[in-house]
Image (tube, rainbow, N blue to C red; front, side, top):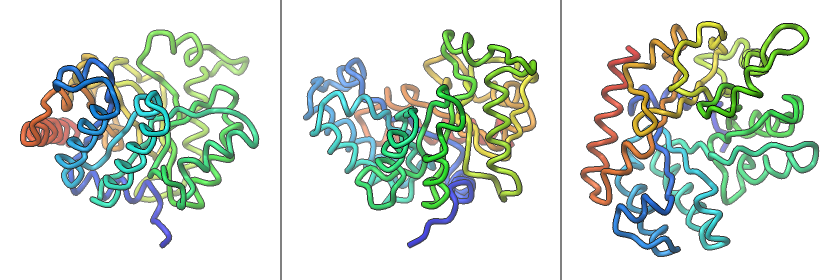
Amino acid sequence: MTLAPFGTRLRAAMDARGPLCVGIDPHAALLDSWGLADDIAGLERFTYTVVEALADAVAVFKPQAAFFERFGSRGVAVLERATADLRQAGGLVVMDAKRGDIGSTMAAYAEAFLRPDSPLFSDALTVSPYLGYGSLKPAVDLARASGAGLFVLALTSNPEGSEVQRAVREDGRTIGATMLAHLAEENAGETPMGSFGAVVGATLGDLSAFDLDINGPLLAPGIGAQGATPADLPKVFGAAVRNVVPNVSRGVLKAGPDAGALRAAAERYANEIRESVA
């Protein structure tokens, strides 16, 4: 079955379930707060509880691949099952793996997450463009062919990111702005929006110096534990706010392990975001 483009499916999912992405980040401290050991049994219990509680209610999920990979092959197996179960229930999966390389290696990364017959096939993948935007071409091409999408690191919320992303090129444009411009080209003419998005931190404050209108999604980490609120979104993203995919991780996950509390927390954030971006 050929998938509709990611941008089309993302818009439909957010309209139906609310504009919320829940991060799935099973780090040791969070497992401990649930009363779970930092081992494969704890990982399984945590992950499958989140999936069972939220898979049919939340639009987008963002598993952080590293927190599964640290357990080796058994951890990756948990990630494979969770990815398949989330997608089966109608959730979209953005695999947060931040892959980036050149040539055949970039192609192999893309095949791991964007080839439809891969055990880790995801609706979208986070990628790093800092070997040059052109290095992402194997991932761009495979995403187009499979109906998947990409989220390119453009303006991240970590303080260290500015030394690269806000560096100025010879033409006077910053690196971050250059990445946004590349994505606007990828999405040109697509409706209701393109499938190639940017990662833009919700904690960055005034971004009016950047053209965020890329006709594609803007994955926005930073809401909740990192300090941003749903009310901040219009101030940060301006006219592009309708295409924002706000990510909340600890703000929802700390409500566990009770499934009802997890659903209530996700619903609360989705409603607050919907009201802020309307």
